[in-house]
Length: 219
Image 1 (cartoon, helix red, strand yellow):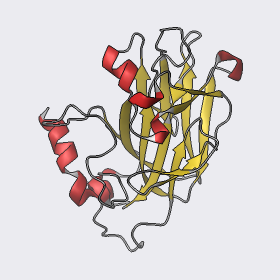
Image 2 (cartoon, one colour):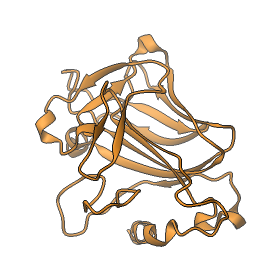
Image 3 (cartoon, one colour):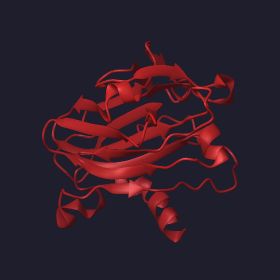
Image 4 (cartoon, helix red, strand yellow):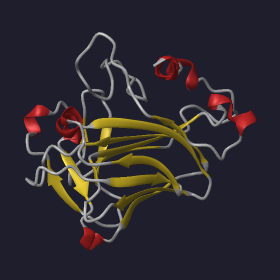
C-alpha cells in the first residue's frame, strides 16, 4: 500500500520538464472507444471518435446512466471472428507517453460472463484480465495507467483473447510526457512502469480524477 501512495503522490513532480523539448510536447490522443462522435467532457478534454483499431465491434454498457462520463458508456470488443490478436496502432513521434485505459464489462453482451484476456504495450504484457471479475469491477470498470517509451513512430496496444472471450476497452488516452521522468536517464528507455492499483482515500467514488480544474492529465 505504501508503494501505491508513493506512486500517486509522485504525480505532481512527475511532469516537471528538465528536457529541451517544450512542455506539453504537443502530442495527445483521447479516444472514446466504441463511439462514432467527438465530445468534450467536464474536464474540458476533447475526445475523438473511435479510431486506429485493427478490428472488433462496438457496443454500449447495459446501464449507461450508472456511468459519470460519456467515454465510460461505450466500448469496443474484439470477438473471435476478428482474430485472437487485435490492436490499437497509434502514430506517435518518438518519446515517452502516459497511457491510460478504461476497461468495463457491465454485462454489455447480456451473457453475464466477464472476459479473460491479456493486453500488451509495444509487445510487452502489461495487463491480464481473468474471469470472473470482482462484482464491483464488472459493473464499475477500472482505469489503468502506465508509462512507456515509443521509439518506432507507432504505439501498439494489443489485446489477446483467452479461449473464446472477447477483449474489451472503453477508452484510451495517450499523452506525451517528459522523457526524463522517473529517472529514465539512469534506468534507460526499455522499461514500462505500470500502476496496478489506485487508492481513493476518504471517497467511495471511482473515476479518472477528483477535480474539474484544468489539468492535462486529469489529476
